[in-house]
Length: 227
Image (cartoon, rainbow, N blue to C red; front, side):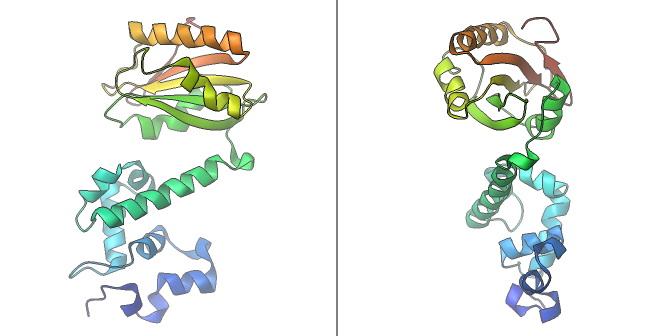
């Protein structure tokens, strides 16, 4: 029988029923994804649909890295399903990042690279972000400042320090990726770094580093002696 909807599955296989009986922690990624998808496709029940998506994306982390447009390119994923899934994944990410008990501590450029590498190494445009840190170097949040080629007009000090001030940050780390995979800093990277470092001195929020992410490589301008 072709079980297209969760309600058509035998009761012992119903992920939603298992969630109520056993708790969400007892469910596999496949089952949780099936709850979000709700329906399968012709000839493919919703659990098999969920399993295929996980396989195609390279697991849950791979699925989380896909943009909403990339999700719509997967067979069976229309705009509505892609939007709902992306929203659920983003909600989970924000929940973890906002929990002070699980906030990572940044003690070296390697720590920040490890935190963002798997996401940022695959981005096809430059994303400039600011990492806000507490007095003990706990990550208070990561703010997205601009998308596109890095230049001084896009990366304005006001926008870079706004969230850091709101979060009462002690320091910040500048962060962006190079889609080419080569993290070597450009002249513009150096100019933006100096401009923001000067702004941080005025505000009393130190710019600890500027980390540039490449394809499984990174460069720290602090380690290069530029900051």
